View 1 (cartoon, rainbow, N blue to C red):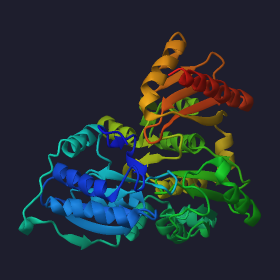
View 2 (view 1 turned 180 degrees about the vertical axis):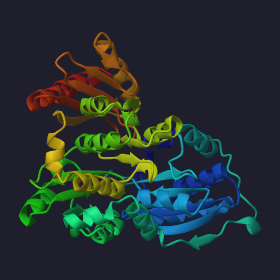
View 3 (view 1 turned 90 degrees about the vertical axis):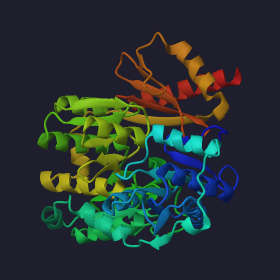
View 4 (view 1 turned 45 degrees about the vertical axis):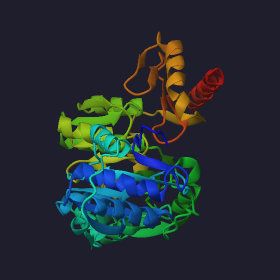
Length: 456
């Protein structure tokens, strides 16, 4: 973790007891509390990671030390906690989660009073308090209090349900398989879908912070069990959540796993059919499929830098109601302008019920691009130099530098190269009308980046 930066693309993250320690968490909590101000009321919860309760106690101690009151929610998904902040008109919240990172990581996300993660400018304010020791500790008789607020998951489930076409979904008797990644995705979504008349089969639904079923990032290669389960029991759809259940990757009745672009395109088409001319917000990492879908259905596309914080903040400033990412994050502002795995599941079930089509049929109607992803290790202190070197080589191409470098090739294929904000890696996203071409782009540019890195 940098000595001048705490926050990455999506909150603070680090290796437990190596890059992120309880001692640091106390100070981070105190810095966050100083940022919000004395006597502010903040919600605190965590995902399934083994270090979650430890860091929650440390952060809550730091918050109390600067006079903030802490409302303890316990185990909950990130979107449930975000909804809880807004629903209880609290001043903000803190989520202990490292999202899709492996179990040896944990992290801290800060939520503003509207339920949306704090902006990058606000994160800089917290960093300045932390690194410049501007923490406002209070006197012994002004220490903040702790309260329990344990109905967050039920309230969240009921809020999502309000956006479901309950009768239509129930009439279809859908069978849904949920892969909860041994984390908080198994708390609210299974009972929600059962209340919508679905038959629900769960896998990896027991809470276990070692993530024995699969790692918490839902990728096609790690979702073989979901695919096979859907096929074996004849389910209509499968959904896999990440570690904090704000992202969801889907599987159709044939067992085919889809990247988030494809399901987001289905949601965009249905949304624009009912809301012509609406704004759709998406990061530059999204597929050309998104651009095609928005243009074909007469919407307005707004590109952003990569990161859910940027998408949410852009939706606020642009007054947009729908956003999405290629990683399975969909932001539906009528509910809340944040990534929300359970809400996305309901949106897809609504569309399937409205159209009387399967997920496979809905996706088959969209333009077809093959998506491949890759990454190469890169130390944080070499990311800037590597990006500059690759830019020098590619600056004569048709590129965008909104975030990293995106190249649009003349044959319709595209490639995004960008440094990760959460891990010591460079990420590559390729797309093409031909699967072999997409794979070749990843292979070719991974080798190119690795070769440049050897010279730095």
